Length: 576
Image: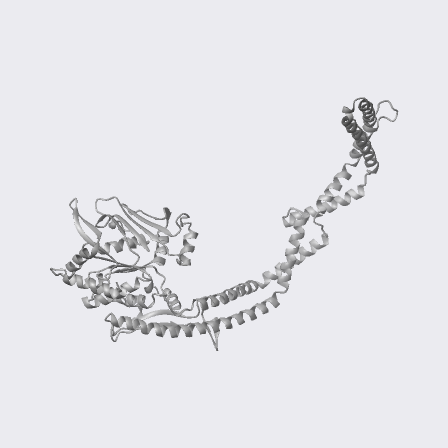
């Protein structure tokens, strides 16, 4: 709901702050007082055209700001939009602050919760939250693409539509695969030849995932065998000592150290740990000397094996360069992918047949579901039409005609219904549009081309009354709803508007006291002079006395008796 509206320097408004109620809000006032300017301000806030003429004379900018409280069951599409654009306030996710600012020179800015957005984002939010009756694009009932949504909610068909949408999604996936397979048979043949050659080449190489690193290590040893043998022998000689005994080796020296420490520990047991360490070092050095000697003896130079390793590594490098990969393991993984793709291409004929049969089965199932939806819509449309006509009769449009146009278009690739095929989407095969003939003898025409002025307001009111449970638009704004309506009918309209407020917030600009008497919250617009310039003021009427005075002024009566009777009659009708 719209909780607060703040306006600065907009048309004849210099500064204004209003707090609205959840139910039926009414704005009254003399002609020219600026009541409808409030509706213009809301339209601007919801992405309407930014016209510098709205800026109040003498001001450099105009500002409109609205605070909206989202209901827990806010439309999923709206919440998805807000999350996608990162516009939700984590501390207050159910509050939206919309801001629109106009500046001289034509510049305008739009914000949601303080974040700058494009004006069309405000428009998307506005279409989800507001229906404004007037010269407004926010009137959802005049958008033909919304009619199927309203009818299906009215008829309780949303679950059936979800089932249909799942079937359509399966068909779309099957058809996409079919299209890909049929796209270019010659291209697929060339691709299969290339894959076949690549798989054969990789298979012939008989690679192992870790062999590259293993063969690199072996090649390194063979290429440096002479140096390895020399270094290992030298290290063993240093440990074992010179064969002529000219100099003791490291092993003998460590053993002598251990022997000396053994004797020391016999005198001073405190050196026992040092003796153990020396004995361990002597034993380890002796084992190391043996290992190095064996290593030096085992190394041999094998040029044939080295050539074999070089050839193998060059093969691996060639494959890596060709496939632009980093390792033998990557080459093997690529080979598996190529093999799977090749299998898919070689089996494409069978797959084409399988997918074609699957698509036909799905088209038959979709056709069956679409036919069921059409029958349910046709039945619900008759009930809806009868209910709307009953409402229009109470609104003095008893000679109007209202019907739902339910149309289908044949298509050679469409869903199968009997012997025919029809164009379809996830909502079914029907085009739904509300049709109206407002006057006797007039042909039925699309609602958007017929509705105008106060007549349009009554048509919208009748539809809203019937579709209240189905219509999820939370805020309904009616401007000039009383155009061409007399006082007696005004009470009927007031009753119907108030009854809408059970599931919606309703804001109404009116000249009819009979209608205004049903308000839950009543505002009065007045025009005064501020610094020799006209300025609109809007004040909340508190208590029965203030409301009766305003209704009396609207009735043109000197006393308030008639006004109080209106208030009492409205209160009795509302059950209060």
